[in-house]
Image (cartoon, rainbow, N blue to C red; front, side, top):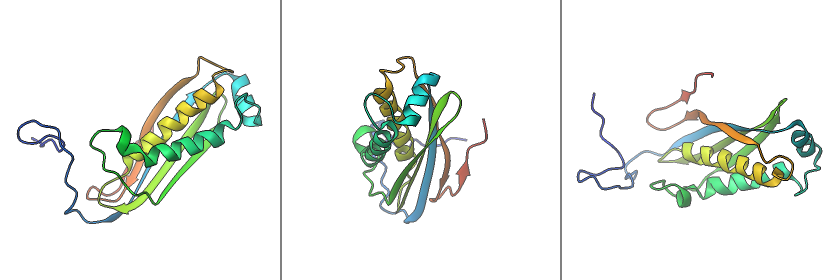
Length: 159
């Protein structure tokens, strides 16, 4: 089964996909990731005692801003007018998990925007807390669900 490459033309030149003839649909994407750190760093962030201030508030704003600027960061992404970007954080014994939900009514999906939001939020947590733990590990960044468009609903299988 041969599938044509959507971002390469017949001469092999990179191109942005033309979505002009596609129907607008409600599109939502959810991505997640986590940052592992020491117990002391986790406790300081949770208590609001990190040296640089409100770590999760700053990370939330950074992630939202990153989702809005994804087309400036990732080649061939369409500039999108997003309806909403939400970032949630949860603590567990060793890490902070981030989950971004991005939505719009449009002609192309928002999966990359959700992944970008999570990635930048986690890097911001690292930056805000590196004085507490320089060995933090960012990982497990992935798309966990998307709806809308021609391919419809998709959900990742559990790890």
